[in-house]
Length: 412
Image (cartoon, rainbow, N blue to C red; front, side):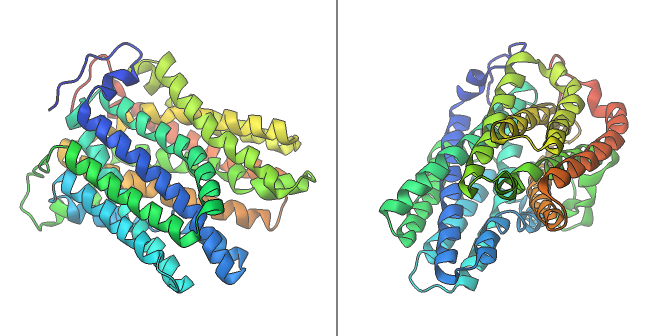
């Protein structure tokens, strides 16, 4: 395992960024996330240009989420592949898909199919990278801070990526933008090839090909099941304000473009929440804050029942997303509850489930808004999420993983 600087009581991003292999992963992640965000916008524009169908254009966003479930199911079958090699293959697989999409005359159905197929690689890559972090940064604060850095980059890249996508689409044809995105995937693969060592996979300790070797059943033990479900239920309910941003601002009598202020508030709040949680709470404090912060993400949207104006709605969404700091403590609990041979599998399933249930949350909010106004749908979904959170909370407090803190870090 790579040497890691001792953790400060409240953690420090500098301590993990000193690790050259992790820094390389961070740069590759930044490049890749910018490309993914640009691709989503470019494909939505391209599909709309071809079909004039809002439904098919919106489907490009949904197809970035739903195939993640398949990637999570496939990940156990790929655990024998060394981490660096598998991440490179995922990058090149997605990059090839974007390059094919850039060819003139590709049918819309093929564009959507290629987008869905490329998205399958997402959780495989993310789970493999997450399972590598304990080897690079250690099992305690290092892993948690490393995951936090990657999340902050993801949120920040959404903001910057949307701006870059708009600029590129004004200057370059849509097919050219997709070629740029393909180049970002290739650049990410090259960075990983040059900057990350070839870490062999952890021996699962059982005969290859047996059910225990590749079964997903081991992921959902009692201790981990509540942690995984908590990490899925809260985001699924919390995305309702983003999903209904356009109909909400239209109900206020504002142009649809005003929804951009709400969509900007979400990643901004998430970044602030991560940074403040790292700065103000130590490892044990983050674990104790899991339930309160998760609840805060669902309590703030209740204010939409009052149908506030645009500034008030943006503030509610910013406060809601600032509660995302709960994921820091949840990451630590999940790591402590998972033995090293299962980490790649568990973290891949965690990522794929998160993206799938978030996508489902978008769909459920949209379906609800067909029947009731956003000021009713958003608080209703938040209340359902709070009820689910309260059902999970008692068992989570009793869970064996809660006993540890960053002051006494350990592997399982």
